[in-house]
Length: 500
Image 1 (cartoon, one colour):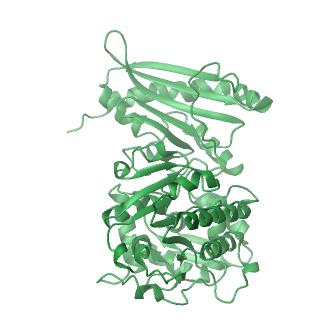
Image 2 (cartoon, one colour; image 1 turned 120 degrees about the vertical axis):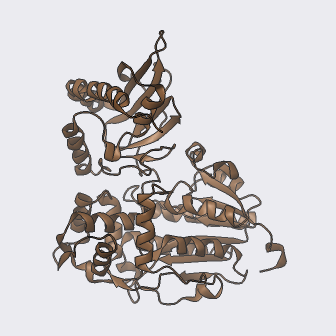
Image 3 (cartoon, helix red, strand yellow; image 1 turned 180 degrees about the horizontal axis):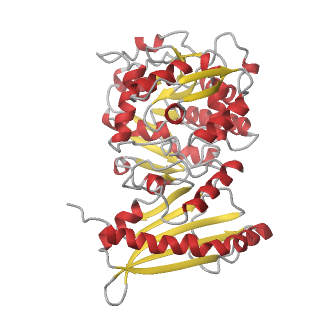
């Protein structure tokens, strides 16, 4: 690199709200670089521990007029977004976004683009790749042809707390002591630890200017998925798993099988499964010439598993596969005007006094969902979650990133955290399949006598006749569901032991 690049670099990160992007930002900051994040909703970054150290630029990668100002004075631009799951035209969306990003990077005089794509199988024509891998490959090619020096990193399965690949492996192994599996469990794979992915991404910021190419990146182990499940069982202290591969489970069928057993929905499981149909092993290790391995070498598979499991145990999962918003899920904020132009709003309001302190009540509110459940009619919540899965939604099993704390943008079962006012209010936006938009707001308040009050509001904005019909169809269940929540949350706060 030239001497002018030896100082701190200004880095633009797209996808900062996602799994890899949300972890890359603090790594770049710790390396001494300045970071600007291009995000559609800057408010979603507010509660990240590094938020005050970055510049947030509002914009969409498909809009040149929004990407252009974000590229100003940038040295290195990280492209970590994709349109998978947005519909049948996701490949065209990815293609367009990559072209916009490449053109604006060249216009702005960006010194380097860095992209994380998927590892492609050796000897398989691009036309035979899954749509997911084919699109990732095309995006890498578009960026390499931009005229800007580009590093395209190609990784297979990423192992780290909260990654979709890790969660899929974890739940399949933990929940099924014996299983009939798709034939792809016998395919060789070269997984890589998330911390090695991040190290490579950070290191690519200082690649020599004449290096513009793709690099395969992987860990030190080559395993089959069956090997990975058995080694997970061993690391986690589980009995040995009985695994019987069968050829009849297609990627489509196996994605529904994964969706049934794990929190990873079928629309995300399917590209993961399709990418495992062929051998995905690194063909070269050239990046190590420019980004040397750490003194202890790259993390092996077992060590990566132990670190991921420890992170989960210690509630230190920085980002999850569900950190990024669900494609197609509503993002409209809760309207504050009751006569909102979108039409009438249906509202269910409930409140209950509690003998608990406001602090105790808030701890219950902020701990809702996940393993703690929803404090009412568990069967109704379970049925609604299964129905959502059946309709292609995320279902109720996404759980929580942290068992005690929530931040804006966190996924919470089939909700997304839209707003948090610590000690006062939690607002959730529904990401389940609905004929309308829905929010659930939980508050800590006080009455005129100064007593603690739990206040709850469910809001629904119907879309068309189906939306109105939906509200009235479920209205009879509001009493046991929302009424039960109100009573049980207030009681749970009263029964909670004061924190030491």
